[in-house]
Image (cartoon, rainbow, N blue to C red):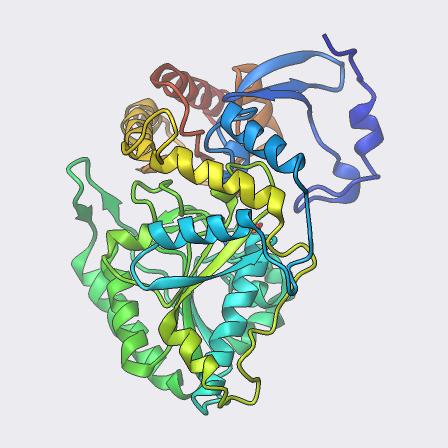
Length: 454
Ligand SMILES: *Cc1c(COP(=O)(O)O)cnc(C)c1O
């Protein structure tokens, strides 16, 4: 038993910033232990309770905490070396990770840039798209088309392609003025039979407006950026794969670089290994992060096709053949080693407990059916306007803003950790959750919603 440290929360407030919070807001709980799908939280009175983690630490901890396979991978690499520079040097963990990523990524994505966070991988993708256009003699193409409702990160260039109103960066609105915003693709839902339900007329209208905007700005555009099928932090919106096929067609027509931001959706979360696979399309560039290391370490990757790299290699652009990026912790061996182990667990690589079985498929399918029944009763509540599930993601939408502090506490009192935002209570549980975990999650979340917003 670890000694209680009730003063941790007091020491935090005013000292540490937390995401999107005032400095003195501090935190409500300190984590003292994390194991499997459970977190142990300590409140300001020093009281502890074990809760089920409904958030997978923001999409990342898909195999749960203290996973023995991931722990062993980290320990094994720690005993060799934790980090070396990547300039002029290479190592087995980076090579093996890139080989694994290329093997599972949509066809054509053959080259890998390892970045230290999701936002940075998107920055690198944007840079590469600019360099691609430059190498084709089109240096005037320096803008990007992005979907309204999108979220792509917190760094400067990525802020500019987030939704200019709801993308969490409205305070920096001028950044978005250089970009071209396409309308939000119409909301859709995936049926239990695997089809897609959406309004055909809304889709036609969306396509018309999107075509018009791309055509009007094509001479200035370098690429199109999207979160395939599920827009996450911009509002947990689900749209039909048909919209992606339209974007792919437009990118081909105008020689734009199609960038799929799969940082949240990648590695099975939506029910396909990568959400673009719902549409059967191949992006020119794909970014992954979040679940890449199973939530252990910060790592992201940008993958691209040979069409893009060979344009740069021609050396015709003013920016030259080199991709102009190289962070200090590029290809961190510790993170790469854990990422390899995480991908092996997902894909059932030889040597794991389930060789050749693609465990993620069964796990996410079970999450989807579990969440569909566990969250369904929420539709009975007066203030709930929508309940949607896709793969291992469930979102409950309210008719107004959630009381984040009160709802979080009401959920913790019922043994569940969630972090609602805006008018949404949403969950993306670890893939290792059991059916009874998911049933309990539904009861806890709906009970908390009834108590606070009933
Ligand atoms: C989280 C996220 C990012 C940013 O990743 P960080 O690792 O937080 O920088 C970018 N795009 C999408 C779709 C995300 O969900």
